[in-house]
Image (cartoon, rainbow, N blue to C red):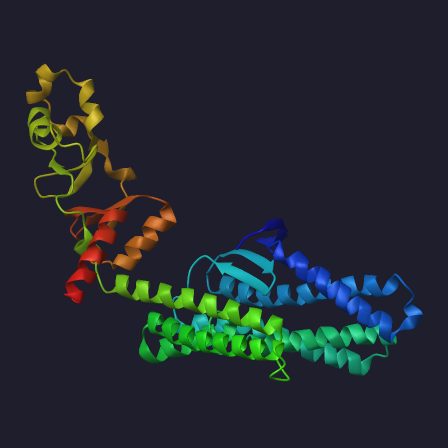
Length: 373
């Protein structure tokens, strides 16, 4: 959810989504008007300046909350890709998920703890220092914002921090991170529907609580919880299969000692599917690859005496994955390295076959069809 990059904080890219400006203006206008009504001695311009400062402090509180998550994630060896402020708050995007439920718990709870700590500090300052009435009101607002930010995010449903805390607890109990995500997502959907219902009834004046903002927050929770649940189901399914199970049937593999004439007759002529083949030795271990177009470098009169190995490229640029790794690990590797395929090999280096995005999709569709039947 990146927007406009405004710099870096502690080495973390910092973005502002365009929706942030709407809230900035809304808080500036609404709180500026409130200050003008409460403290007439402020004059005409000063209330709006203070309202703008209050809006910036609001987002500074959100930023501190996200930095809490970020610092703990970094301490756990997880890179923070970015922090983005948007209409509903902030989002720290992590490079990967935590490896253990305890690490996931610590990362999730860090944000609310920062917000609640700021609330306590602000209340302490307010009780200890005598401030002008307008500044005291701003301090009270900031304290209240941090209290709401901390407590609201502890609601046990994704995508809120409380949902991630719940996910970590279920993960610890079941030993399955995907079950944790599913459980927390369903909880998030429940709270999403609750907020939507409360907001709608509030807008219709049927309930004394609830507003359009409550309805929008509910929609946000419902949408994101739904995406999390769908992602968890897919990841759980991918985790139940190995990379070897989804290799492309009749993968393009040839022996290194095969001559170019036999290679052309058996694998190339009349077959336009593959432009590149994996090359293996007599034991089936990966040696490299050969591109069909490379054959043009050798006169056809010499094909019978030229082995495939002579035109072979080394295996250093071939991405591989062990055959017993999960299909989920394979998909993550494909996405991370932005590649189209992986070569699946056994622990002893013997090539099993080629794993492509298309072959993964076909395999999953086939499995779904078999289960349906």
